[in-house]
Image 1 (cartoon, rainbow, N blue to C red):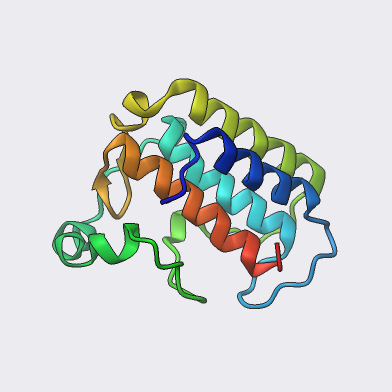
Image 2 (image 1 turned 180 degrees about the vertical axis):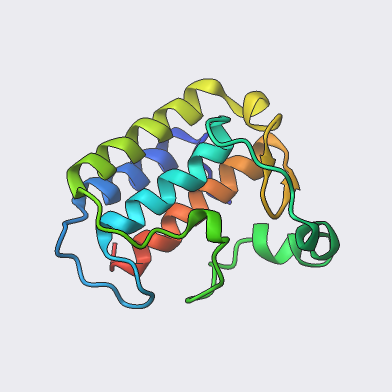
Length: 149
């Protein structure tokens, strides 16, 4: 499983982020590239501790049944529901959002897995350091694939 904590996995993902263009066409969903970068940044802020969350009640109920399918090798499905906290609808400045996401990736890695494991995901609740690294990689990868990256 790929993870942001593996340098080669991270470098590959960062290269894909850097190659994204403001005009990149989406293959599904509603966000444009700048909104997607902002959305990924908001999600990553949960893992860095910049956006503290509590686990939602629905997550507490469903998580034991779906955790392995979400955290496994299989890519996320297209047009999956998004927590309203992470929905981005207004226009964003592409270069600023790209720089912000790259900075957040660096901060996530610098803080390390043990720090991430202290954070709570809004749906999944407490995750191990490995799960955080894999989930954040998988989430960003999902959205880069949304724009052909």
